[in-house]
Structures are given as C-alpha cells and as structure tokens.
Amino acid sequence: MLWAVLARLWAFVSLAHLPVGDPAAYAVLSHSIASGQGLVFNDYLYGSGLRAFYPPTYPMLLASFVSVGFGNASALTLNTLCDVGAALTMRRLGIETKQPFANVAALAYLSWPTIVLGSPLPQKESLVAFLGVQLCLLFYRLWRDQGASLKWAAHAGVVSGLLALAQPGLALLPVGLGFVVLPKTGLTQLAKVAALTFPFVLFPMVPWWYRNWELFGQFVPLTTSSGLSLRYVILGNHYAIGGLAALPEPTRSTAAMQWGGQWIRAHPAQYFSRVLIRTVGAFALDDFSWRRFHDYTPRWHFARVGVDGLWVVLLALVATSVKRPNRALLVLLLGSALALSTSIWFEFSQRHRYFLFPLLFLLAGGGVAALIDLRRARKTGLPPSAQKALCSSRSPS
Image (cartoon, rainbow, N blue to C red; front, side, top):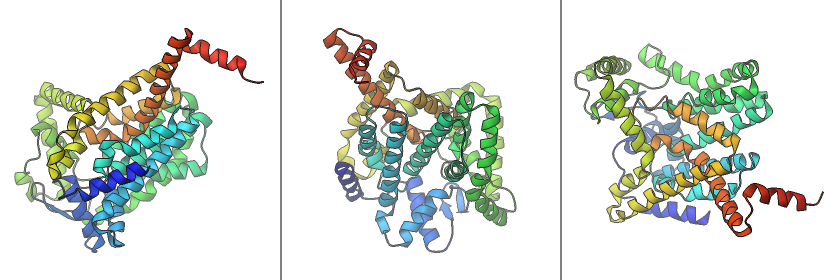
C-alpha cells in the first residue's frame, strides 16, 4: 500500500504538463464548474460552447475537489480514492467468491503501472473501474442469493446511473451482468429486480435530462458525442467538423451519425476491419498510460517494454486460472464482455477496457494458485484433485 501511494506521488511530481485530449478537457470542465460557469467547454476541433459533449459524473466530482482547494492535486486525490475503493471492492468480491490471493490481487491492482501512471491525470478511468467493480459485486450477490432487497436496488440503481453518466459506452453493463445471472435467478425474479431498481437509476439521470432539455429543447440522454465518436472510427483520427459546427450541438452528433451510417452501408468491410484492428490492438498492449506519461516525462521511454510485458504476464495468469476455475468470476467477466461488445463499434482503445482490471487481477490470483498446485503435484506425484482430497481427509471432523 505504501509503495502504491509513493508511486502516485512520484507520478504527480513528474507531471510537467497535461496531455491534450480528455485530461486537458476534464481539467477545464472541472474549473468551469467550480467557478460557477457550468459544464461548458470550447474545443478547437468540435466547436465552442459545448455543454453536453462530455459526460458529467467525473468533471462534477473533480470540481468538488477543485472547489475545496486541492488545486492541481484534485485529480490525484479523486483518482486515488477511486483506486482504493476499487481495490477494497475487488477484495470483498474475492473473499465472497472464495478466490485465492484476493488481498494480493487488490494490492497488485493499486500498484499496476497503468493505474499508477494515470492517477495524476484528470481522466475518468479510475472512477469507471470503481463503479464497474461495484456492479460486479452487487450482481454476484444477486446471482448467489437469487433475489435482491430494496437496499440492493438503491445501491445498484444509483451506481448504474452514475456509470452511464461517467462512461456512456458502459451504460449497458447492468444489462450484460443481468443477462448472465438470468439462468440462476430466473426471468420472473430478474424482472422484479429490474422494476425495483429502475427508479433509482433515474435518480442521478433525471437532473441531467432536465438540464439538457432546458439547454437544447430536446432529449439528450447521455452526451452529444456519439455520432462524432463513430466519425472518429471511420476517419481514423479527430478532425475538425467543418460545416457541422454551424449546427446546434445535439444536431451535430445526429448528422455525424447519419453520415457514418451511410458510409458503413457503402463500405461495410472497411468499417468492420477497422473495428477489429482497433479492438485487437486495445487488448494486445497496455501502454496507453505510459504513452500519456511519456508525453510529459520523455526520459522514461524504456518503461514501455516493462508495462507491456506485465500485461502479457497478467493475461497468461488469467488463462492459467481455467485450471482452477471460479464460476462466479467467469460469469461476471462474461457479462462485462457482453457490455463491452456494444461499445467497440465507436471510439475504442485500451482505456475503455480498464474497468476489467479488477476482475482480471482476481482471476490471475486463481492462475497463481493453479501454478502452485501444479508445482506441488510435481513434487508429490499426485494430481491437484487428489491433493485436495487428501487434505480434506486429514482435516479434523
């Protein structure tokens, strides 16, 4: 734990300037909110006076730290709190699912270079991971108990609403998790739980809808950036929107979405190949935080091999965990993957799958346990199943 804190402080003091893109935008948005101007942002590519281009959860939380005087340390403080919250939640999930090395997995998550290097930057990934693993814990309990209380519904509903307003691409995560617990809970019971939970989902979302209706005179459920996100996939980069800038903010997204749909119908093979390449690339490496860090600390260029190497080791341990499978965690991973599959068709990169880290680290603990079982088997000549049976027979009744 001390190492994780010191590493974050080192990353913070190494920060020379904010990288362009989302970190710079969230810094501007948080100060705009804190100064009373509201959620407004001027972008040199996508136009000025943007009021619903970015989802509100993260910049509003960040603004609360700016308002009370945390200054440049606001992002570090908020992200570290989210990281600690995610680690504690995944530890609880590991204990409840009886996964070995849950404590070690939580500490490894806090110390992971990708997480540490992103901690001083105003970016929402730590918050999204915290909210995502909260939902995983809640849906595991639903899967285990085959039912839910009003307290569960309130917790799950508010977290789901906040997640949708933090990372719209994961708005369907509760749906994905609900789908995979369906065989255990049954359709009738799951429908009752959904009806009980839905009003609490609205609790954080209705103020956002009302605010957007007042501003734009139309319903904007999440953000005004979805069409431009699709445009990014097609064009391969962020380019100025040209004549779209003359349109009202929500209409720009709609026009970009219509143009994107026409382009996809005319070039389906190109679109699907680009989506496939970007998706594979997002899972093949883990150097996105390093590249952002490298932008402001170039002397650490040699670290790229290390962070990608650790990612390969993590995936290898997750794969090894199938020798000691944890059905509950695999079900949750499947539900998370289903939700993720709906967002890969828009802008998608490594950072969009960071919310999977808590589950991957817990599963990696099973991989470590499987390797220990294998080593013992080589020493004793007994397969792991026989070792467990022997240990059980020797245990006092």
